[in-house]
Amino acid sequence: MNSHRDFHGETVLRFGPYAFHLNQRLVLRGDQPLRLGGRALDILQVLVEHAGSVVSKAALIAQVWPRSIVEDINLRVHIAALRRAFSDGQNGDCYIVTVPQRGYSFVAPVQLASQPIPLPIETPCQPRHNLPARLTPVTGRDAVVGNLVRLLPSRRFMTLVGPCGIGKTTVALRAAELLLQHYRDGVWLVDLAMIDDPAQVVDHLARTLGLDTGAPLEALGSWHALLILDNCEHLQDSCRTLIEALLFSAPCLSLLATSREPLLAPGETLLPLPPLVVPPTSALSSVEECMGYSAVQLFVSRARARQQGFALREQDLKAVREICRRLDGLPLAIELAAAQIDALALVGVRAQLDNCFQLLTQGRRTAVPRHQTLKAALDWSYERLSPQEQTALQRVSVFKTAFTLQAAKGVVSCATLQPASLTLALEGLVLKSLLSQETANGISRYRFLNTTRSYALEKLEASGALRTFEMRYAGHIDHARSSDRQMAL
Image 1 (cartoon, rainbow, N blue to C red):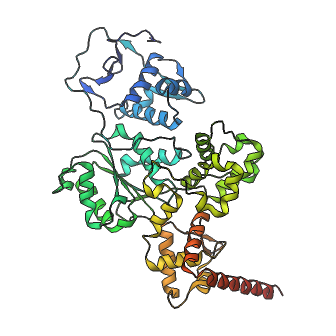
Image 2 (image 1 turned 30 degrees about the horizontal axis):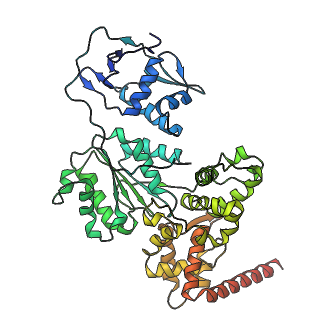
Image 3 (image 1 turned 180 degrees about the vertical axis):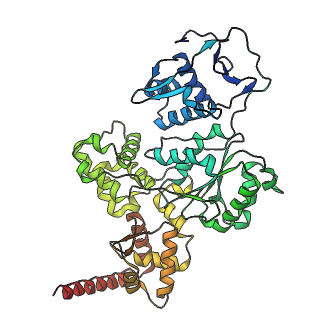
């Protein structure tokens, strides 16, 4: 049976040990329903209706998401879910195969059921969740989202780490959307940015999940669910304790945390989130080539949302690349810069880069306060540093390029920030994703993101000490150059 295009509402299709009730949108194996989401069922119906033929990815997306713009990963995730559902410990490809460069094909024989098949009394419940509605596509994160979707059900506890504005929450929520059908008891976001008291962590979890605050961990013992613990960095110890308890008492829970730094809990799998990719200068001769880089894709997407008819032209490529590079490929910064396109035009956005915190103040009204502007995001991080870490962050911002620990000690150490204390402070700033550390030729150096350095310089200027440490930095540079000249003689 190669085509079922003229099915009526009561049609029941059989393939292998399965029966697909089209009217009830239900797949049974014997009398047991398979847990399949609505999109997966839509995809299955299209493939079964064209059994034996190849259906292209574009055709599947057009039929299943007719009024939405979606990424290929949506389709791949649901195809994988169908294969898992039909695997039974065997090979799910015996039903759905991938035809390289063409699409997918349902290859099992399909027959119309000759007699009605009794339905079970209960049908599967729709997954439960408290995820916010996503208003825009997620750009440039297919690989990391795919890793999360693939690994979370088996790894159980993963932490997305990276600096503020890198998009940790966005990526976590996207993965959660794609995993909705996998968890019987749903997917739940627990936003820990809403509390500051470590003693409130368990109660906040219970309130979010609607559990009895008297014994929430016991209530979760039988749950098969994914919990997203968002913004854990300021409650690291309490989060680590909670995670350890949940992993022990609720063996079917999966946990996805977001944090500026590792939580260091047993069983943690770290997934660092990189910036979006900025095109090299060699790509500037082609609009098509530049649009292959995720930072440019995001900028253009958001610019089009603000300015009807915006189109990237070859003469714009240098300016767009410079904007994305100076903003470190940070999604939040790029989105906020693109939001200014209607007011400043592309040339104006580029011209304002040296004053990036005034440029990036057009907030996203639908975001939580700490994500509405880049400054708010950095304020959130800065306010949770120790006093010594705050002082160190301000002072090392006078370095215009990567610097060694020895150079930092020579420039910024003083009576209030001794060398040993500075070392610990810099290590803390690396852990909290406010500095990065790189090693080349056996020499370790610290490096700022451009946006973070600009923020720290503003703080240093507000403290009244900018001129002092600029002069100390200039003296360090002069001394280094003098030493180089003497070595050359």
